[in-house]
Length: 283
Picture 1 (cartoon, rainbow, N blue to C red):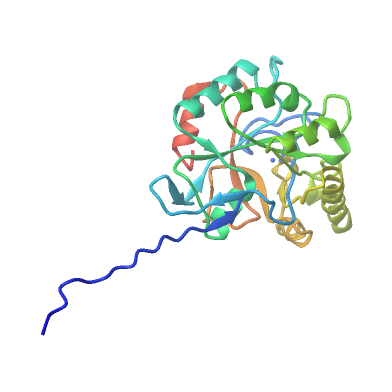
Picture 2 (picture 1 turned 30 degrees about the vertical axis):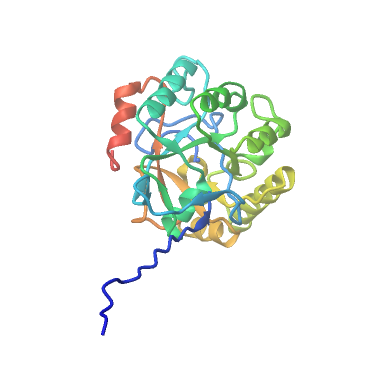
């Protein structure tokens, strides 16, 4: 009898596609910012159509902790730390590109943190609070030059106001891969107003942005980083998927969807401090 000396192996390659992908002022420990120096946020209620390849390879990894940078305005104004000088902002974007960072969207971050998705080896999320007009005029071309995208947490009542972006500018950003997310209607301290006002601020801004952009809004940033348990519950109740504070640190799985930390970027911080915050999750 002849013996079978060979074995047949079937190699199967599996690939999956996972649908992919601010509070105002500085970090809570920093000096206070005046109420006119506002920030904004936007949150999709459902996952957008962007997708992320989840093939398990050497260039992708499961999310652990991701730096979510947050800026406000990109312009020169002496003595105002939330106004990032354009040359300093460009230097930071150049640094990110040189060091091999890849920008990911809030949708991608959500999928990676909570739905088992994967991210590039060196992911970064770039966000802007409030919706200043210079986010479009100055930051947008710089971000695009270095191959990144970003998200804007937009105060809906500011749209078209002096110093803030118009609908046409927001739509152009959105068409270029930027996310426009929720940051309330009027930018109040949410823990200091009644529950009905909180719900109106959250829901009305969400609906306004969704109608104006034709896209779902599911991510949110607490104005001034101000919230409590009731506010966080209201954010969840109104259909947002994730909410960001101004607490210092990287976004990671040690925190739930409604208490994610960010990395504050401010004028004259210098590249050494910028780099340090990208190297130390608990900076």
